Length: 242
Image (cartoon, rainbow, N blue to C red; front, top):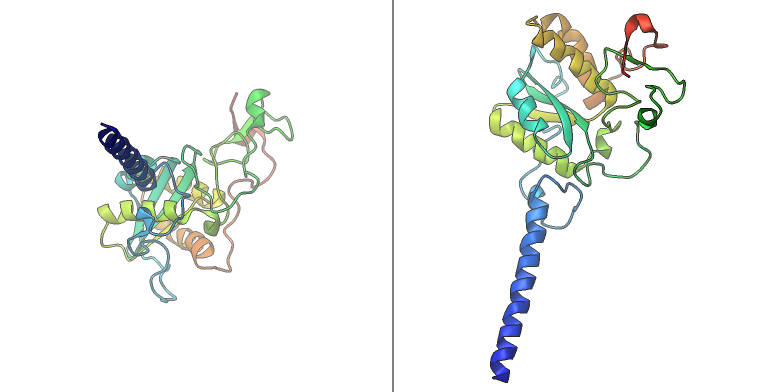
């Protein structure tokens, strides 16, 4: 009887331990955790699917680009991503992200958030100035906004790998997948997407698009004109947000 009880107890312990291991692996495989960064992490077992894969100096000299609604929806459905805008070119896929902190580890490192959302409790848009106005051209803002990460190196490698694999599932012909949650890049992508939503060709914007992606992904020297904070906001060029 004692031996039987001991065997049952040992079996229960083994089952609990196994369940714990399975749960840990389940979390590591899920899109709720981009920060475990342990050896043999299941998200990182496949070869790196994002970033440069060649030394081609002309990799970002795209001949055309288009907005992909299907890929944008696919990536936006991931936990931790509030919204995604995906652009496809003759060579690459470019992904702009806006984050919502519903998944852990979306940043590689800590640090102060780029967004100040304290104005929501005060009935204003800009907490620093007390202004009730927001700039209508931007999707991601320094105030009362979902979240951005300035440097692509501060964005979780696991998140970038997860996004890149989703993109490559639907667009296997792309050579490289480049991903950023930079505020300026996301707002430029939003501007281009609005042109596509309006049924207008994106070709008139190809030079500006290439300037943006070269600057953010290839150390380009030409800085795109700022779109997030081009100057002092005024009611004539803004929308009320309260």
